[in-house]
Length: 210
Image (tube, rainbow, N blue to C red; front, side, top):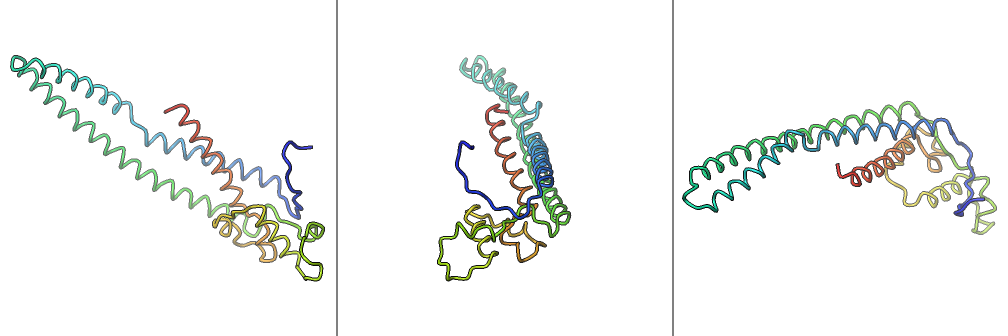
C-alpha cells in the first residue's frame, strides 16, 4: 500500500544496478561541479577584507570632510587611500569575473566529456523499457483498431513522462529503433540525478547564504 496512487508501469527491461550506479555518479559529479564552481565564483578572503577596509576608509573620509577646511590634509589623504583601495577592489572583482568565465568553460567541457563517456559506455542499452503487450487491458480505444505493442508502449511512456525533454532523444541514440521511443537511456538517468542534486545544492547554498 502506498500513500500516493500511481499507475502500474509494465516494465519489460529494468537495469536496477546500472540505474543506481548512474544516479550515484550523476549526483556526485554534479555535487563536485557545484562546489568547484561556487569556490571559484565567491569572493576571496582578500576581497572581503578589502571591502571592509574600503568601507572604513569611506566612513573616516566622510567624518573628516564634515569637519571642514581644518581637516583638509587628513581628508585628502583618506580620499587618496579610498581611490587606491577602490582600484584594488576593482582589480579583484575583474579577476573573479575572468575566473568565473574560465570555470564555466571548463565545466562545459567536463559535461561534454561525461555525456560522451556515458553514451558510449551504455550504447544501445535501455535502462528502462515498457512492455506494450501488457497494456491491452488499459487501452481505451476501439478493439477493431490495430495498434502495435510498440505504439501502445510509446503512447504510455510519453504520457507518463509528459512533458518529455528534448534531450531524452539524444539519450536514446544507439538503442534499437523498436524500443527507442518507449524506453529511457542511460543519459536520462544521469541527467535526472544531476538536476536533482543541483536543486538540492542551490537550496543549501541559499539557506546557508554562503
